[in-house]
Image (cartoon, rainbow, N blue to C red; front, top):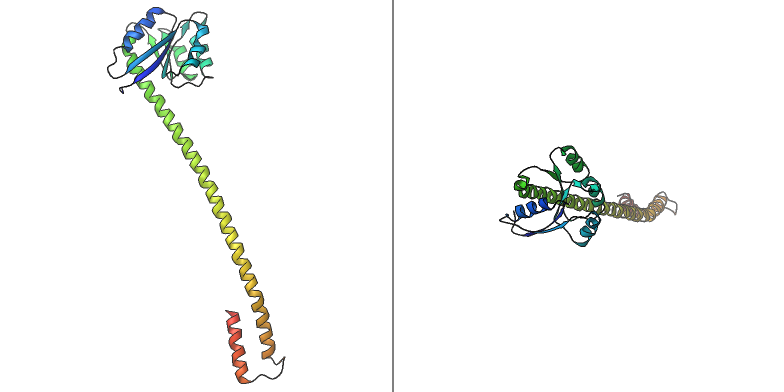
Length: 212
């Protein structure tokens, strides 16, 4: 694991299990663990609110309550890291239910369970961080998509304005040409008197220009 310090909260009412967890995490060679724990149900949410924990180890078997109820309460908190459920042998069904409710993984507390705890934490943190990064990228992509759609709408609007402008200019330009062409045709037809050959050539040229 990375050479860093991780803040771990252990929610466990059994002192012996807490000692086993502390001993197991102290064996890490690459990461140091700052371990906090709570042994009273009414202290759990207060502890979570007081500090940001990189990972939470939550026991299923809590006197007066169970880990699933605590897990549900934790879902309403802005947790920095994942929750790993700890269950006794025979409680696997509850552990898998905990994962459906938001826990990232679980460990079965049978003899020697603490020996594999470092690996479980390592893998869980990798999964959690990958999910966080994926969600961050998805949000970034969604934001970029919104920006591109807005830019595309703006380009379409500019294109419409340009087309309207060109059409208006063309219309304004064609109107006097139409008048000039009509008057020229009238002159060519003798509407203002006889037209000489030289005048006719000049007027024919003007009509050709107007028809372009």
